[in-house]
Length: 334
Ligand SMILES: [Zn+2]
Image (tube, rainbow, N blue to C red; front, side):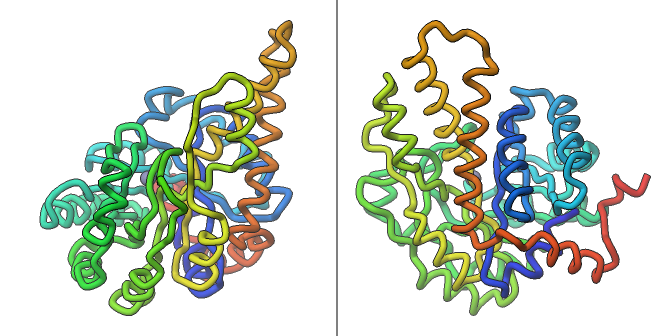
């Protein structure tokens, strides 16, 4: 399904849907197993880098397998950080049910034009569009953000402007908006504990009533994984994320409907693999290190679903989807 039935409920329902980046089978299974156990709706998102790494044909079939295994789960397939209308078009033809077009690094008017062009194509196919306004710090694959220190120092300059957001929404025709409210991509987000700008979120909700908001760069960089990585030969000193209490507040009290999670998945996987390699140096069966890594993803995602307050919401989302007339993108009507 698209994100529409999910966000309809999430905006006022005090929860957000987790958007998890997938790159291979174990990551996908780890996420799906957690969502199935917690009866949670979910967004599986694929970046340009994931397409390049895994090959879209493989990713599509891994996701089709997940859908076949769990017909009871509301699942959306989303393009993370699309940068061209061409890529948006390709993803729609690949069966994506939601796309992001990120023009946040362009000049304001160019961002609007890019999103409006993408929205025209996507809406014609029944696919909703996420846009981004404002600037995040950190680095995520091809997405180069601002230097962490520079970002922290001048934070308010980079945050989403609530009045501009209203103009942007109207003219770009986006369906949801990724906002810069003090989060940052990657594992090395902050020098000090992050404080999200809830005042800005509140203002955006006033200037853009009903617009579902999205948080990127919201990994919490769990200490348990950080410690394992550093204990077993890794080098991630000073990694720091967004505290889970702040994310919980953003989704329960404000209109944040989608929270992106990528770094925490990577850390769970890496921590467990490092642990097996260090404690069982004779081990060379990939199942014996990818298996524990997959289990670690499952338990981490289970906890996240409670942070996002979306555990147990699957049935309600499906009911909302039916209420809307069970809409699917045109790809699925063939
Ligand atoms: Zn992002």
